[in-house]
Amino acid sequence: MKVAEYHGFNDIRIADYPVPEIGKGEILIKTKVCGVCGSDLLEWYRKQKKTPFFGHEVSGVVEKVGEEVKNVKVGDRVFVNHHVPCFTCHWCRRGSYTMCPVYRRTDFYPGGFAEYIKVPEINVRNGVIKLSSDVSFKDASLIEPIACCLRGLKKAGIKVGDTVLIIGAGFTGLSHLQLAKMMGAGLVGVCDFFDFKLEKAKLLGADFVINPSKENVKEKLYSVNEGRGADIVVVTPSSVKAIQDAIEYLDKGSTLYLFGPTSPEDYISILPYRFFFSEISLITSYSSSPIEDNAVYRLIKEKKINTEELITHRFLFDEIAEAVRVARRAEDSLKVIVEFL
Ligand SMILES: [Zn+2]
Ligand SMILES: [Zn+2]
Image (tube, rainbow, N blue to C red):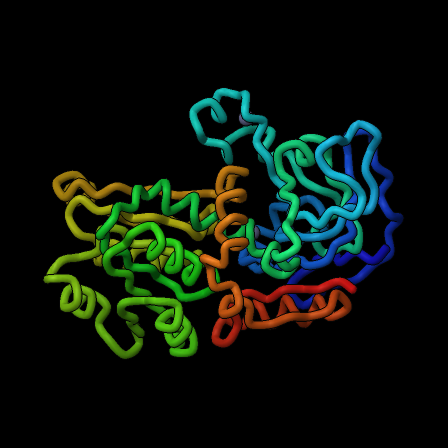
């Protein structure tokens, strides 16, 4: 089978590997769609990985099942998450599913950018969603990345009527926008340097948009928000500058929510005095759990999320190098997906 290998942004290769053998509790998936994730594009993040395989936003068809598998059968159309929690450890019992050691360890093989994927037993049990016939493979590949956004907004404690400012109108920014509206936000604003993305944000329901290269973000925010900062500021870019700027947009009693990870060497400076006396909270959210995956699956199935506007480019697997190149081009791409014949 053909498998993509990542050796650097400009060095994506397709190599031949044997189709994996499966064990008793495992399944083999024939990949249909895999999305390019922002984390596939972060050089420092990729360097921490020990294998050349990548891609994890996957949907496909069950090709083979081990003799002990009961919950899926050959021919089922499925979404599968690469990481799953054990639901029994200390962290799982506290609800921090993505901090579970099993979660970090689990992964499917070789990766999403492969013609076939072997899914380990625990992922089969805790990470597979059978797709109803009205959910496309394309839409199902968006379950995991949108679920990450849902988990973050839940952690940020979004309340009905809140003013939410989203920094970055990429795929995750626009997913946060749609979810925040659905979760009852009173006013949602989106900031980005590219007008193409701000137009999308308006189309998807943003109450106001700001291009920081043309307008003063704080002034515009205060002018539309009764002279106050935002209740929640969501920072989607993996950028220290974006985080540092975001601090200026926070109201008293607000939450700074970091969605995009920065590199291990990056620092930000905060004024604890202001965070204390203004009761500002800082939260982060890493990845998603089966709880959000299932919730987002239902939202997609019930057409509560506009997925059409989020996917800007579709490539065939043979064109994976071009897909990665386009995904890195922030000015005109949102979600880039790769389709398998
Ligand atoms: Zn991802
Ligand atoms: Zn656990």
